[in-house]
Length: 383
Ligand code: SAM
Ligand code: DTB
Ligand code: SF4
Image (cartoon, rainbow, N blue to C red; front, side, top):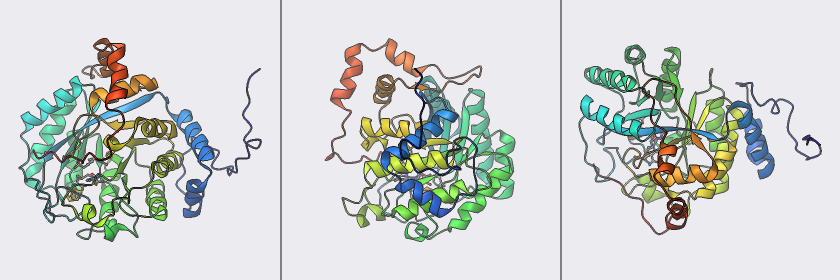
């Protein structure tokens, strides 16, 4: 006999509107978002997972690889960031990378299976003289058959048009936290500065990638407010990265936050689940901080609606989960990287991993390095 799910029998107190899992809404109230956060965990996960299934293949995860094309020396004072010139992080500043070197790195990422290449620069905003190099990078990466994403700080109208004309697919510009908590994290720009650039990017027809960081000492109401801001934009960001703060030595947040300031893993899952419900058709990316997350936590995030990750052994300046570990985890969970149907599409990294691994190799990934050693320090790679 077919099993019919009856929400009432389950005692789930979901409003009729929330039960519409597919139609994006832009009129969420803060109270509704807080209610979602406060649902019993299983009810929240159920609702998030159904939303996820309605809109995505739950066994596919999109993979993006990051490259820092201009590292360090940034004029902004974001308290979490290794690259701010205001902090003593011992990260040397570098010039904008050459186009050829960027394309070599993109080829490597494609060989490893990434379908999107995300290039990040430690800038408050790009200088007009840099735009020709940026444009060449976008065109070159697109010719490799990959999607392109750039994150360069605040943009002028003209720079936004230049990026659009170069064929840029996504622009990443995070709101980072709530409007109320914003000046506890950065004071060299305002929350409204961020929203203005997001509006420029959206109006130019570039896909918006915008999310934030959790674990910066904020409260749940700030996570509610951050997701509420994203979910009430005129269009939901096509991609929503949720970063867990990576504490970097020398940054103010590393000094200010007590050792036990991390949000609980289950609160992190709740954040992913609420993002999924609020923005049903957006990619929700499990972003920075995965190296410190257990396999079980990541699995729960994929169940709750995360459908994208940063893949590759480095984020911008800090280390990421290893590629072999990720492929072993995907294999264990029956998850496949989302495939692209372009002529130069990346090769299938999971098939490759499985072809070249024995069963022991796969299970060894889980016995040897799946549980992060809590005493191990976060490494900041100094390029
Ligand atoms: N400078 C540009 C900007 O801020 O928009 C682009 C690069 S910036 C490093 C991109 C994003 O990375 C930030 O907005 C922030 O959300 C995230 N990020 C930076 N440092 C982080 C850290 N230590 N932990 C987690 N996320 C971080
Ligand atoms: C995003 O939301 N996370 C990425 C990407 N967008 C640019 C950056 C994470 C940076 C983590 C710290 C670092 O490696 O410096
Ligand atoms: Fe600069 Fe971006 Fe880092 Fe802020 S997050 S200091 S803007 S690189």
